Length: 79
Image (tube, rainbow, N blue to C red; front, side, top):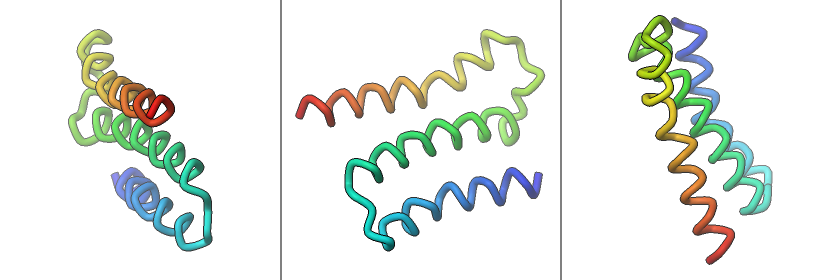
């Protein structure tokens, strides 16, 4: 559990570190999008304890993050 907690903390701090190093806005946006999906999967599997849940329930709980990222990235690229 400590490993998951530390991973989530690193995922939260990584965009801040990347911003301070002078990374571009597009790179930062895609970095945040990727980290959102990764964090959502970790939260569903470990903190919501759905690792052993039926496949459909687990997929439904994990699918919201990629869908939201896809919608937001669609607005970002078209806007």
